[in-house]
Image (tube, rainbow, N blue to C red; front, side, top):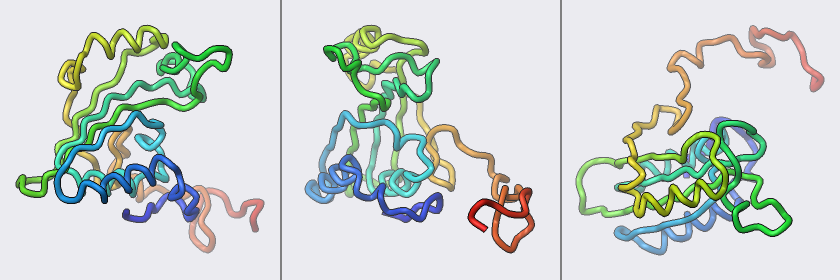
Length: 182
């Protein structure tokens, strides 16, 4: 996978979801389908930009159904999906996504990335109802996303972001002259 510019830590490379997706991709070879119910953090994480770029380069089609529900981002994401079935624990803390990736090296053209998400402010039971009502990825009314050059799928950054003055960069003009690391 292309290395992320966002971090120098390799801890994310040992994430079990990342490893499972990579293993499955190697296992199917040049043709096949992979589907996961996974932690949705990679959809917007700065440290997962390399993973998103790699998936987009490697697969013919990617279908995402974002169930959201990240408890750290209270509000519009609603309640975690697994809360509907958890007894006492309250379910997951991270948001959840369903991802279906299709690889067919005989098909010309690049990747098609189709994205849908559950409604805002939904409970876990309402999310389950939306999945049942959809019946398939086509029933989610997905839209096509074209990633930007940074590997962003959602919350795409402005193209002039790199021209902004950094908060701090050693030896370079920046907003702050020093940090606690100096």
